[in-house]
Amino acid sequence: MQTAPVRATPIPSFGDALRAVESLLLSSGQRTARRNAWTSVLEDRRRAKDRVEAQLVLEKSLSGRH
Image (cartoon, rainbow, N blue to C red; front, top):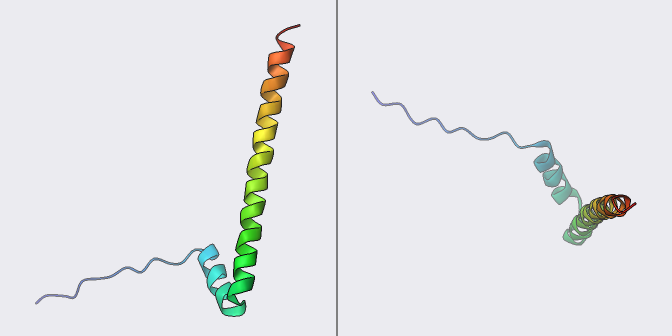
C-alpha cells in the first residue's frame, strides 16, 4: 500500500502577510507609491551610512598627520 506524498506548505512571514493585506486594501497606485517611498527610505539610510563611514575614514587620515 502506497501513501500519497506529503507536501509541506511554508508558513508565510509577517511581511508576506502584510503585503497580502495591503494588496487587498490599497489600489495598485497607492501600493506603488508606498513601495517607492520605502525604497527611498532604504536608499537614504544607505547613503547616510556611507557618509558616516567616509567621515570616519577622513577623520582618521587627518588625525594621523598631526
